[in-house]
Image 1 (tube, rainbow, N blue to C red):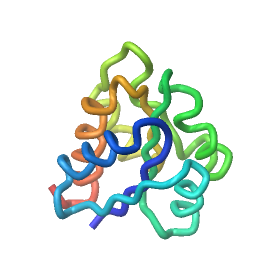
Image 2: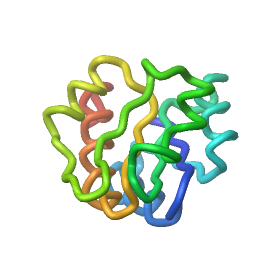
Image 3: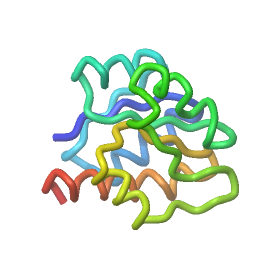
Length: 123
């Protein structure tokens, strides 16, 4: 089971999208950006998902500070659609924190979760 922490804006929407995409293969914890990133760093969670208005700023700023820039990536900026191939590459490259614009949550989260499940052989 993958342990996902959710922070940022519209956490309830992100949480629902994670549960819908991952079902019983994911455990979702809604928390603050700071606590979520700390959980990932401590090994108490596997991945962090965050959202903000632009997808490129506050969605990941705290996670970048705690987990390091190399472990984080924006997958859908404001007005952009998520790219499944690019997300799978980011997951395979070991990214553990993903940011997106709030308008892209419902499109981005299923792609992220499916990529994570695939990586871990849980699809």
